[in-house]
Image (cartoon, rainbow, N blue to C red; front, side):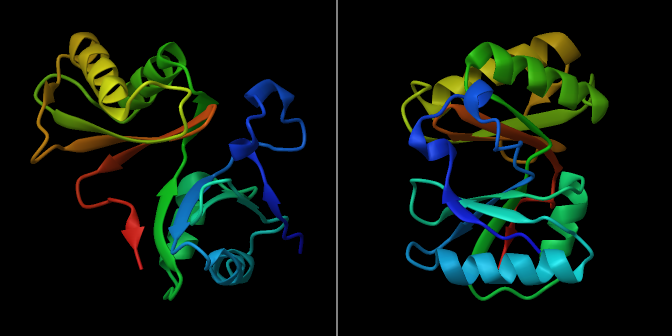
Length: 189
Protein backbone atom coordinates (compact mmCIF):
# COMPACT_ATOMS: atom_id res chain seq x y z
CA UNK A 1 0.00 0.00 0.00
CA UNK A 2 1.31 3.39 -0.94
CA UNK A 3 -0.67 6.30 0.38
CA UNK A 4 0.70 9.77 0.19
CA UNK A 5 -0.82 13.07 1.12
CA UNK A 6 1.16 15.70 -0.69
CA UNK A 7 0.47 19.06 -2.13
CA UNK A 8 0.44 18.76 -5.89
CA UNK A 9 -1.02 20.68 -8.80
CA UNK A 10 -2.12 23.52 -6.56
CA UNK A 11 1.52 24.44 -6.10
CA UNK A 12 1.64 25.92 -9.58
CA UNK A 13 3.79 23.24 -11.19
CA UNK A 14 3.09 22.76 -14.87
CA UNK A 15 1.81 19.46 -16.25
CA UNK A 16 5.10 18.76 -18.06
CA UNK A 17 7.14 19.24 -14.89
CA UNK A 18 5.14 16.81 -12.79
CA UNK A 19 7.27 13.74 -13.44
CA UNK A 20 6.33 12.17 -10.10
CA UNK A 21 2.69 13.07 -10.55
CA UNK A 22 0.83 10.91 -13.05
CA UNK A 23 -2.64 12.04 -14.10
CA UNK A 24 -5.21 11.70 -11.33
CA UNK A 25 -8.17 9.38 -11.90
CA UNK A 26 -10.54 10.99 -9.40
CA UNK A 27 -11.26 14.44 -8.03
CA UNK A 28 -12.74 14.19 -4.54
CA UNK A 29 -14.19 16.85 -2.29
CA UNK A 30 -14.71 16.83 1.45
CA UNK A 31 -15.31 19.43 4.09
CA UNK A 32 -12.23 21.61 4.65
CA UNK A 33 -10.18 20.21 7.51
CA UNK A 34 -11.47 16.66 6.93
CA UNK A 35 -8.97 15.73 4.23
CA UNK A 36 -7.23 13.07 6.35
CA UNK A 37 -10.50 11.31 7.18
CA UNK A 38 -11.62 11.47 3.54
CA UNK A 39 -8.26 10.06 2.48
CA UNK A 40 -8.73 7.06 4.79
CA UNK A 41 -12.22 6.43 3.38
CA UNK A 42 -10.85 6.54 -0.15
CA UNK A 43 -8.01 4.18 0.69
CA UNK A 44 -10.46 1.74 2.32
CA UNK A 45 -12.71 1.70 -0.74
CA UNK A 46 -9.95 1.45 -3.34
CA UNK A 47 -7.63 -0.98 -1.56
CA UNK A 48 -10.47 -3.29 -0.52
CA UNK A 49 -11.58 -3.20 -4.15
CA UNK A 50 -8.21 -4.53 -5.27
CA UNK A 51 -6.41 -1.34 -6.25
CA UNK A 52 -2.73 -0.99 -5.44
CA UNK A 53 -0.38 1.98 -5.27
CA UNK A 54 -3.11 4.44 -4.37
CA UNK A 55 -1.91 8.02 -3.90
CA UNK A 56 -4.08 10.77 -2.53
CA UNK A 57 -2.80 14.26 -3.27
CA UNK A 58 -3.96 17.27 -1.33
CA UNK A 59 -4.25 20.43 -3.37
CA UNK A 60 -3.80 23.93 -2.08
CA UNK A 61 -7.60 24.18 -2.08
CA UNK A 62 -9.12 23.05 1.23
CA UNK A 63 -11.35 20.03 0.81
CA UNK A 64 -10.11 19.14 -2.70
CA UNK A 65 -8.16 15.92 -3.24
CA UNK A 66 -6.80 14.25 -6.37
CA UNK A 67 -6.45 10.46 -6.43
CA UNK A 68 -3.93 8.49 -8.47
CA UNK A 69 -4.78 4.84 -8.87
CA UNK A 70 -3.79 2.34 -11.60
CA UNK A 71 -7.42 1.64 -12.54
CA UNK A 72 -9.67 3.12 -15.20
CA UNK A 73 -11.43 6.20 -13.76
CA UNK A 74 -14.88 4.60 -14.05
CA UNK A 75 -13.77 1.52 -12.10
CA UNK A 76 -12.18 3.64 -9.35
CA UNK A 77 -15.37 5.74 -9.26
CA UNK A 78 -17.54 2.60 -8.85
CA UNK A 79 -15.32 1.31 -6.03
CA UNK A 80 -15.64 4.59 -4.13
CA UNK A 81 -19.41 4.67 -4.78
CA UNK A 82 -19.75 1.13 -3.45
CA UNK A 83 -18.91 2.18 0.11
CA UNK A 84 -20.77 4.46 2.44
CA UNK A 85 -18.72 7.60 3.08
CA UNK A 86 -18.95 9.95 6.02
CA UNK A 87 -16.29 12.46 4.93
CA UNK A 88 -16.16 12.23 1.15
CA UNK A 89 -18.70 14.68 -0.27
CA UNK A 90 -18.36 14.17 -4.02
CA UNK A 91 -16.32 12.13 -6.48
CA UNK A 92 -15.68 12.93 -10.14
CA UNK A 93 -13.99 10.37 -12.43
CA UNK A 94 -11.36 12.14 -14.53
CA UNK A 95 -11.39 10.42 -17.92
CA UNK A 96 -8.87 12.88 -19.33
CA UNK A 97 -6.43 15.32 -17.76
CA UNK A 98 -4.97 18.09 -19.91
CA UNK A 99 -3.21 21.38 -19.49
CA UNK A 100 -5.67 24.08 -18.41
CA UNK A 101 -5.77 25.87 -21.75
CA UNK A 102 -9.01 26.43 -23.68
CA UNK A 103 -7.66 24.77 -26.85
CA UNK A 104 -6.56 21.60 -25.00
CA UNK A 105 -9.82 21.40 -23.06
CA UNK A 106 -11.88 21.78 -26.25
CA UNK A 107 -9.87 19.13 -28.12
CA UNK A 108 -10.16 16.60 -25.28
CA UNK A 109 -13.86 17.36 -24.79
CA UNK A 110 -14.56 16.90 -28.52
CA UNK A 111 -12.75 13.57 -28.64
CA UNK A 112 -14.50 12.29 -25.53
CA UNK A 113 -17.95 13.52 -26.57
CA UNK A 114 -17.66 11.79 -29.94
CA UNK A 115 -16.57 8.56 -28.20
CA UNK A 116 -19.61 8.88 -25.89
CA UNK A 117 -21.91 9.13 -28.92
CA UNK A 118 -22.77 12.82 -28.83
CA UNK A 119 -24.32 13.78 -32.13
CA UNK A 120 -27.41 15.08 -33.86
CA UNK A 121 -30.57 14.46 -31.86
CA UNK A 122 -28.73 14.35 -28.53
CA UNK A 123 -28.63 17.06 -25.87
CA UNK A 124 -25.70 18.08 -23.71
CA UNK A 125 -24.56 20.56 -21.09
CA UNK A 126 -21.09 21.70 -20.08
CA UNK A 127 -20.31 22.29 -16.42
CA UNK A 128 -17.00 23.77 -15.32
CA UNK A 129 -15.67 24.29 -11.82
CA UNK A 130 -12.54 26.42 -11.86
CA UNK A 131 -10.08 26.66 -8.99
CA UNK A 132 -7.21 29.06 -9.55
CA UNK A 133 -6.66 31.78 -12.11
CA UNK A 134 -5.08 30.03 -15.10
CA UNK A 135 -8.36 30.28 -17.04
CA UNK A 136 -10.36 33.50 -16.85
CA UNK A 137 -13.74 32.05 -15.86
CA UNK A 138 -15.80 28.89 -15.66
CA UNK A 139 -18.47 30.49 -17.82
CA UNK A 140 -15.92 31.24 -20.55
CA UNK A 141 -14.83 27.59 -20.56
CA UNK A 142 -18.45 26.36 -20.65
CA UNK A 143 -19.35 28.64 -23.57
CA UNK A 144 -16.23 27.80 -25.61
CA UNK A 145 -16.56 24.05 -25.13
CA UNK A 146 -20.33 24.14 -25.68
CA UNK A 147 -19.98 26.09 -28.93
CA UNK A 148 -17.28 23.74 -30.23
CA UNK A 149 -19.31 20.63 -29.35
CA UNK A 150 -22.47 21.99 -30.95
CA UNK A 151 -20.66 22.94 -34.18
CA UNK A 152 -18.70 19.68 -34.42
CA UNK A 153 -21.46 17.21 -33.52
CA UNK A 154 -24.79 18.88 -34.33
CA UNK A 155 -26.00 18.13 -30.80
CA UNK A 156 -28.13 20.66 -28.97
CA UNK A 157 -27.32 22.45 -25.73
CA UNK A 158 -29.88 21.74 -22.99
CA UNK A 159 -28.85 22.96 -19.57
CA UNK A 160 -31.91 21.51 -17.80
CA UNK A 161 -32.33 18.00 -19.21
CA UNK A 162 -29.17 16.98 -21.09
CA UNK A 163 -28.45 13.44 -22.23
CA UNK A 164 -24.74 13.97 -21.50
CA UNK A 165 -22.85 16.33 -19.22
CA UNK A 166 -19.32 17.37 -20.02
CA UNK A 167 -17.80 18.01 -16.61
CA UNK A 168 -14.59 20.05 -16.46
CA UNK A 169 -12.69 20.43 -13.19
CA UNK A 170 -9.88 22.98 -13.33
CA UNK A 171 -7.25 23.05 -10.60
CA UNK A 172 -4.65 25.67 -11.40
CA UNK A 173 -2.85 24.42 -14.53
CA UNK A 174 -4.66 21.06 -14.80
CA UNK A 175 -8.09 20.42 -16.31
CA UNK A 176 -9.80 17.11 -15.60
CA UNK A 177 -12.65 16.15 -17.91
CA UNK A 178 -15.35 13.52 -17.80
CA UNK A 179 -18.52 12.74 -19.70
CA UNK A 180 -21.45 11.78 -17.49
CA UNK A 181 -24.82 10.45 -18.55
CA UNK A 182 -27.82 12.12 -16.93
CA UNK A 183 -28.20 10.62 -13.48
CA UNK A 184 -24.47 9.81 -13.28
CA UNK A 185 -23.61 13.12 -11.63
CA UNK A 186 -20.70 13.14 -9.23
CA UNK A 187 -21.61 11.00 -6.26
CA UNK A 188 -22.57 12.74 -3.08
CA UNK A 189 -21.98 10.85 0.12
